[in-house]
Length: 332
Image 1 (cartoon, one colour):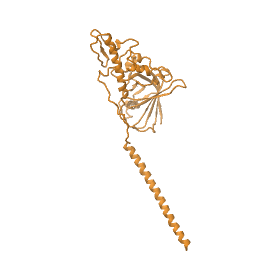
Image 2 (cartoon, one colour; image 1 turned 90 degrees about the vertical axis):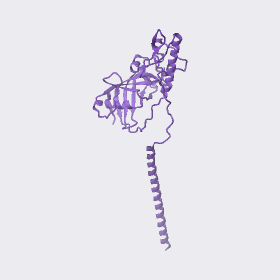
Image 3 (cartoon, helix red, strand yellow; image 1 turned 180 degrees about the vertical axis):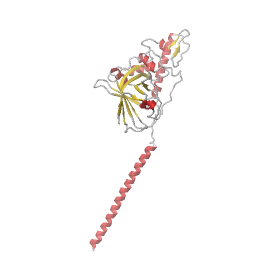
Image 4 (spheres, one colour; image 1 turned 180 degrees about the horizontal axis):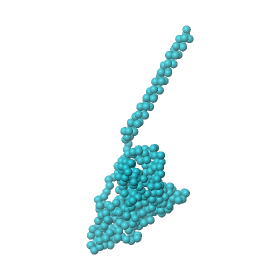
């Protein structure tokens, strides 16, 4: 049966950390506004903040009866918001803060968990974002941190949710935006080269860029203009944010700072980071377990048909015998 808590109980935290996908639901205040549900999925994206800590900590999985885990609790979560073609969640949170996060079990015992809360948005380039996601932790395409203060947690059965087998993370978003971010980085380097005598340009986890023998500084410091020059139209993630992420479907403001941030994006190529293409071929084979189930159904169905046909034949034969006997009696 469903239960409610005023916090995230300890036994749920490892289970939440183990989920590969979750959903967030938000809505504008307007009655005619679009209610939005967005799927979110990638490892290391969701983080549960333990009550005694100030950052996201992971609790190792264990039996639900583990006393140490039961002593843990949480009233806050945050997740790394990866760039998409829409910006509904961010826009709705800016307007009213309401958000519900949903998890559901696709393996093991059935379970649905909802986190009801209020959210805050920390965009790329803000001090809060940098605190949660320094350059060495940030994923390609990351545009914001969504912080949720949880005031209610609901659990329910999930008895009708089907089983699914996890295949692999989908890397298409990372592949797409790693190229966009590299375009931003390369263009920034070109702008520096045109205004100084470059010796070398490199990127590390601290985004350090050496631009001249006389002046060693970070790229973000060197591009401290409030309106940095962007690559040509169609290039770079900041141009993408400016094109796609300024407003929601209902015209509410979305990203306010990220696209205009002077902060440098990572040199993914220089760090040797790349991703293999996804295997997006559909699974045409029916799982053996499903075939076994269908086979049993077919066997039971065929047995029923045979039994029904047998009954008809027996009845037909009996009718012939009775008819013959009556005919002989009438003949006498």
